[in-house]
Image 1 (cartoon, rainbow, N blue to C red):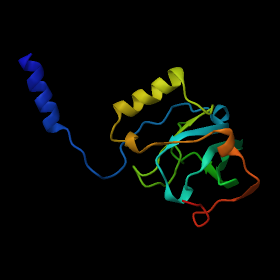
Image 2 (image 1 turned 45 degrees about the vertical axis):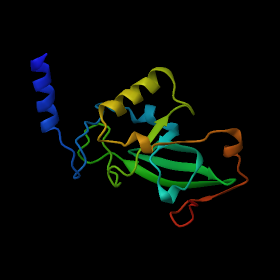
Image 3 (image 1 turned 180 degrees about the vertical axis):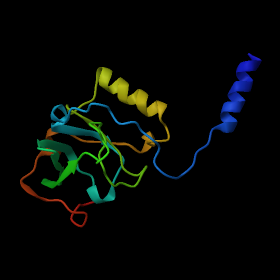
Image 4 (image 1 turned 180 degrees about the horizontal axis):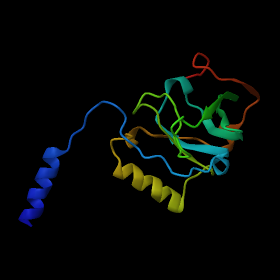
Length: 167
């Protein structure tokens, strides 16, 4: 028991929290881009002022040669907002799921699923990952995405920009 207590004290003493560069996260090897394409639903996210309080958020990925076309959309007050772009593997990816993106670390995160709800083994896997990696995401800040029929109704659609998103 004493050995365990000493080990626990040492572990607490050497644990540290610091701001700095992103932690190293190993990309998935032999990433199947074709299997990744399609619609992904935003289960939850860290709030982003420029995205407002969008409901029914989703991302659609379409493979086109060596690039991926990306369309992100959500509904705010009866209007569907969307933005389109492209993604490609990093030059040094070697068929791993390594993409070059630019985000402020710790300020943006999304939990995506092929379905509008996350249940069963998938939910357990995500919950366990978040518990085991508390420095990656402050889970107390995650906001659940509304996929109710009422929230998803829209009568018009427009391109989303940071200037037009409603908080």
